[in-house]
Figure 1 (tube, rainbow, N blue to C red):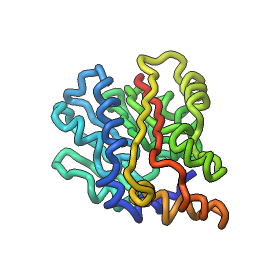
Figure 2 (figure 1 turned 90 degrees about the vertical axis):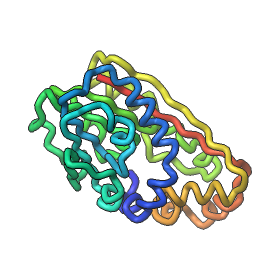
Figure 3 (figure 1 turned 90 degrees about the horizontal axis):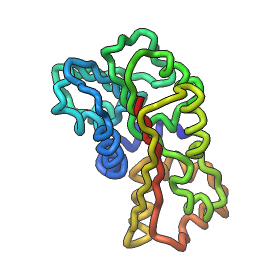
Figure 4 (figure 1 turned 135 degrees about the vertical axis):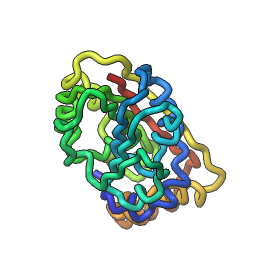
Length: 230
């Protein structure tokens, strides 16, 4: 899984270049049918606040922003009813939550150290859930060119885990997005601003793979995610 230090180190550039993540947050939150009035929202992997930005007018009682990257949390919007928790969502105690807590997580849980265990713990809570996570088709063309393996789970793997722990669910749908860039430099800058270059992806490349990274025969990147609502 990705080193969380990469997100922490690239917090500012990540926050200002995560348009796909914000678009995914809007779609995720649009599919929430529950009345959030007087509920507490817990955002797992809250980052710089995409979920809060989308839901801030929903009259919820409290908002808890949880993230292991303190530099990202520092960029999250501030308000009297927002509580910040600097912690990994893998380590959080979900058994302490009551049914008036609504759990959201957008474009974060794919980095769980043990997604099977995390989904099991979430399934045992009485909370409603709205989750999205990127799957292995994300950057598939880049991985194929570099001859690397995606650290993300496939859509089928994630779907199997969700069915294993939740059985039935309201919504399970796919999201896909392709970004087109004008130059190779622009594409590489996008990866760097997201913390994938200079800290995550390129640190694992061989010399030959690194050379191939600087000679990409394409100017686009693809994203794929799953959206799950309980």
